[in-house]
Length: 274
Image 1: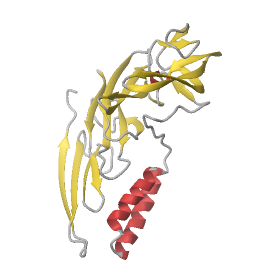
Image 2 (image 1 turned 60 degrees about the vertical axis):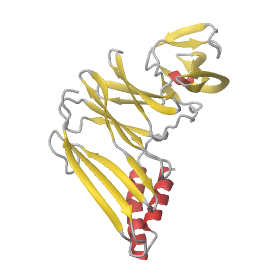
Image 3 (image 1 turned 180 degrees about the vertical axis):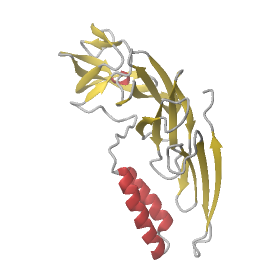
Image 4 (image 1 turned 90 degrees about the horizontal axis):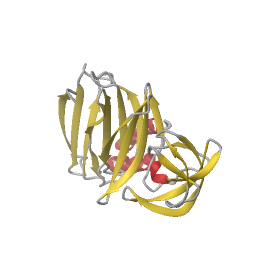
């Protein structure tokens, strides 16, 4: 889906001359290479996959014999516990501002029901930490909740509002930043022109998980665009213990001459004292 959206956007920019179309083909090939990587896309309205293995975002989650908050509790399951999805029930409960269905699941040979809002979208592990994710909604705005769980079962939580509701998640080392252990990168790019999106970064620190910075991406096909990008110390052209911030604004002018106005801002940022 994202590949089609980028293709549409690039075509809207480069369809003015044959020369520009050739440039488009080169750029599109590069984009497709990036999109070929194996990422799982998430959206608040996606259902959990039947037969899929998932992990609990919630802690001390009530594992029930029926999809009802008044039903008997089989067990209290800890954060990160594994469950297999058997089926989605038609019983819905409002949770974290959203409609959450109960799922029939299997856990250690027992079958029961767990509310979908307490199940992580996916689990990512990096070194000594496990990362879990879920959505919530506040005043019509979707948020992403992220929990970082240490090996001893303790966890910290951070959250962010979302410009667009489709995203995928990457976890990496500190990319060369002092005082940071891991980086959780939320890729939250717009589904269409005219929608604000960007990249969101959480830093794992000695004090737990913290939302560090988010960038903005916005475009109106054939009119203008705004793009922010971060370059970390280990990235190409990175600077030791600095985050290089690049902002680009573009605006299209005279169509007959393919006039484009571009302005760029570059700053060096430093992560210090949280």
